[in-house]
Length: 272
Image (cartoon, rainbow, N blue to C red; front, side):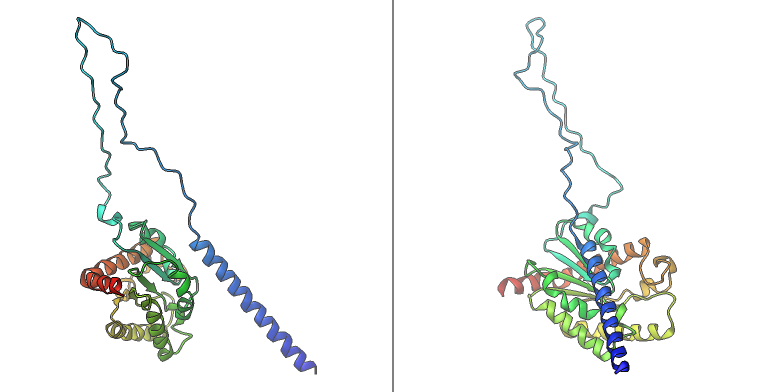
């Protein structure tokens, strides 16, 4: 009797710990994805007023002075890369684990009116599948979804099961219909050979899967594997420099995918 009571108590404590962890994760998800407060529009620095014709003017020798029109001065930052801030023709939503945290600045800010980020800290492929309705809420049919997830699954989900989950995830987002660009797993620091072996194998299989599913794919492994400065001190999350590199890779992947497939897929989406 005492042993059974002890087992029930331990099971209840484990369940409480799991619920507490899930609550903390949901709280971080809400705080990361909450929309920033709208700021009032800044005054137009280029707006220069012209004196009205009805203003009083001093006349000398019966000759009215000529009206002086002050030309507008256009301000320009010569260091700004214009192509980096051009809005997209269609909406793009990036979703994934905590490695997407910095992409509100590095990816979405490149086209602030058409790009959104959905970050699921500690999330795996199944978590992204479960979030599809929230991520796709009110999204146009032509929306492109950029997905990065899998790092947290490498050592806790069997490879075959993980590949099946990737297929489910891709098809869940494609059913809208919409376009999907999948990012492969990024390397980590301070982990053993087992992680590297499984992760590189998964990336190779994802490279085949994207052809089968007719989606976009980018493998960021070699861009991060040999540079410790791209990671924070925990060896998992990206540093500011790493987040910037990841944002550029995702932006390039979007542009390449649209150049190859954008017009065809957009026509299909409108037809459906």
